[in-house]
Image (cartoon, rainbow, N blue to C red):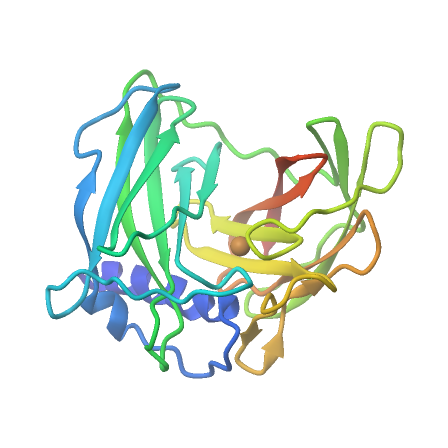
Length: 280
Ligand SMILES: [Cu+2]
């Protein structure tokens, strides 16, 4: 493994501690070095707009497939598949079920041509020193690809008939926790009612432009057991106690330009609101 690759691996693991519900102050990169993705499909370029089988097994250091995953309520279980195009123009977020033999198979529609970064966030059972870790794959989607540059920060995003507004321009600094106040209203201006989706009221997924470093927090409510996560000694999961309001916790490890994909379920559908954030 090259040094750069090792550093890349270490960063997502460091921040991954946030998405754990246990107390983590000394993250380790050991597990990611020893576990790996086996038999990944698709092995060849695929076509945009077509349902594609994405399949793999996580192999343990012993060479045996990992078959025991954390289960139960809350978002910190099983396998999370988070796929972004390298320019952060698209995101796909699935929690595919893991069958008894550990062989995961999912159907994915890649929306447009280009290179995609496939992040597998793994929550194994019975590894107390490390609640989760990430592994990576790539998929090439055939066709003409021109990377899109990220738009500057905009406080308001309209998606799926809803309006998502971030209040106050965020002043973010690397390795400093902060909360971003967000409101969501429907077409008539009424506060949206959030439904629990993958164990949380909202998922805040952050990727850094260029390096694709990753960070993930949740917004929890009264009806989301095991949702909160702790990073070091800092509780950074957000909370929502009234309709239409989300307080999004953030703690980014590096300066740079980040894309936040804020995802939640309202009116029977999952919406994704992207925001560009600058971190000093
Ligand atoms: Cu999540």
